[in-house]
Each structure stands twice: as structure tokens, then as C-alpha cells.
Image: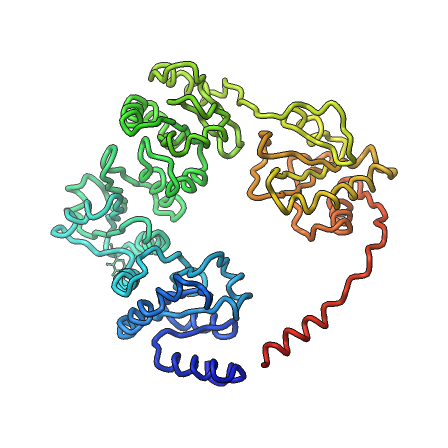
Length: 495
Ligand SMILES: *[C@@H]1O[C@H](CO)[C@@H](O)[C@H](O)[C@H]1NC(C)=O
């Protein structure tokens, strides 16, 4: 921090004084990596000078930094106005954002309170070993110390299992509590052999045992399955977990807590049968009823049941005119699991005419057009409300007309599909998403990540399409050079 910003005059001088007395280290793009590498545990605050929450946090953050200094836990801050590049690298989207760094590789979001005491206790906990070493006297209390607790039973000299378990614990320490025992008598009392892991939980069957060879991926997936309640609840905190679980999700929509409780009880045997294959969860239809539309259910008739095959993005709504009887739902789920139910397909009507150079695809024409093996097909997945999509539209139409008026008109199709009103098999993360489905290789679409200019699209189609088609793009107008602006900016920096 020393003389670098002296040019800022009085303000700079004041800031320098403030930092000199502070135990919070202000980092820049130049100092950040070395600082993180040089300290085992760092809490970093990414802030903006104008942000009110950041100002409120500042004195608390200072106080925590001073308390944590003696424990050698470092607190740092990064001004995202000055260090925009660095903040972008770290995916900062709001202020303040707090992250815990254990080196540059291991980063986790800070999920504690924003008070000095909260920060201190959270960070002290972070500094303790991820795995608590337990004895026969401490293991009993530990089993119920949190909703989900994992205890490894391993021999004292089994270094490999210890290391694997510890690495998982380091990674998931914010999610679960981890303990370890070396006492063979304790393991025997628990009914397990070395090495094993027992996951204790305050719901469903109470515990699950992992008795395979210790492997980090296997342990993580065991924990994820075992820690998911048989019938959970979909809400803002759990939704992302269900979406990334890698298995279908069966939704039970109901408006009142009593109804959800009752249905979760009556459908539990089905959830049990499909544990690890299909997740089951209730969802509050009075708050999240509109979400039913995403799974092709009507949004005004509850309770309702539907399965979402997340990987294939296929939806299987249970007939909403029927009551949710366990027997009927069980049969429906069995049929789903056996692949005997057709997914419901949401589609706009097939357009009667195609009036633009860009071909309008709907769900019902997706296979015929996009998967036409004889053509290279570029598809834009858009949403009607998406501003970037609207901005792209004229360029996209220009692009399409270049091919329509070329020798490649029967080989190249430029298409678009409204992915909010049509079920498409692709997983669409954001709008617009643009992919090329090459002729003869429809299983391997190539996602476009270049600039959204006609020239770059043409190059992309030439490079990735089967036909290596190329068309001439009319000369773009000469772009203004930005060096003047750049210079102005530099000067401004030096004021
Ligand atoms: C794992 O290894 C560490 C470091 O050697 C040791 O302190 C700890 O007791 C071991 N944990 C178990 C459960 O054996």
C-alpha cells in the first residue's frame, strides 16, 4: 500500500494512515496471489467504496481482524472499483462478498454473520482441523452435534484412509461435521470394521454406513445421498443442491404445511424404494406455485406431483385431475423408472410459415430441424425477456440471410428457439445460448462463446460445421479507435 496511490493527494494520504493502523490488509491485483499463498487462512472482503453494507461491515471487520491477528488468521479487503479485473476473476457479483481462502485452490464462501463476534468465531472454527479426533468418551455427543455428522472409524496407522477422509472433510467442512476414531472397541460397539464411515443424521433412518474402500468421490457421493432426506423440501436453499444431484427430482406440490406433511408421509415408501435413484421433495405451492409451470403442471391445481428428469430436462407430470393416492403415485413412479412414460412436451404451435431468414424452431420441430443430419444447424436458445437476445436479433437475421442467399442455403440453417416456451433437450444455463449442431455429428453440438458479431459467427460455422461453409460478410464500418479514451483514462488515474 505504500507510495502507490500518493497521487491521490489528501484522500490517498488519509487512506494510507488508516491502513497503517488497520489489521485488515488491503490487496491489489499485484499483491493478492502472494498474500493468499503466504497465509494459510485468509478471509477476504470484496467491496465497493459506495456500498452501504460494506460501510456497516467495516468497523466490525476491523475489530475481528485485530482479534484474529494473534491466531494468525488474516483479514483482507479488495476495492473492486480499483481492482475490477481481480474481482471479475473471482466472480464477484455483489458487495460485500466474503470468501475464505486456504491457498488459491481452496476457496469457500463465508456464510457466517457480519458482526465482529460472528466473524471471529466462524474463522476460529475454520482454523481448527476439519476432522475432530474423538474417543469413546466424546463420540456419543458428537453423533448428535449437528443435523448430519460423519465419523470415520480408522486404524491409527491407516494413513491413506485418514488422508482421503481429511481431504473430503476439508472440502465439505461448511456442510457437515467430521470426526474420526481409532479405537477398535468403539468401532466394534458401533458394529463396523476399520475402515468405515458412519453418517449420523437427525432424520429418516438415523444413520448410514460406508464400508467400501476410501475414495474421495465415493465418500462425497455417499454423503450427498445419505444426507438428503427421503422426502425433503424444495426451497431457495435446497433447490441448487437438487438440481446438481445428478438424479431426477419428484416434486410434491401442496399449499399447506399439513398437506405437505401428510403427503410426505404417505409417499415416503416410494421415496425409500427409489432412494439414490430419484429424489423426493415437497414444495410450498402457495409460495412457489408458479414453479409448477416449469415442470409442465398447471399452476392452479394442487396438490400435484411431477418428476423432472434434470439430466435430460424431461418433465413427467402426474395427472392433476387425479388424487395423490400412494398406490397410483407408486405405479406412476414405477412406470417412469421403467421408461414406460413419455415425457410431456411443452411446445409453441408449429409456425405455419417461416417469414424470416432465421428459422423458428419449436419443441415439436426440434428433431426434424435441429437434428437433421444433412445440415449444419446453428441454434439460438433465447428468452422473450432477454435483452442480449433482442440486441442480437438484427445481427442474427443478417447472418441468416447471408446463408439463405448463398450456395449453402440447403446445407446451413440459422435457427432460434424460445427455450422458455419449448422443452428442449439441452441444458440451457443462460440466454442467449448458441450452439452449432454439425451435420453427421448431432450428438456433439459446439457451444458458441465468441463475440456476437456476424464475422465471428461465420468463422465459427466454417470451423465447426461439416461443410466448412463460408460466406462473404459485407465490410463492417470502420471502428473508432479507443486509444483516445484509454489515454484519457490513464491521465485520470494519475490525477
Ligand atoms: C489422522 O492423521 C492425523 C495426523 O497424523 C492424526 O492427528 C489423527 O489422529 C488421525 N485421525 C484418525 C481418525 O486417525
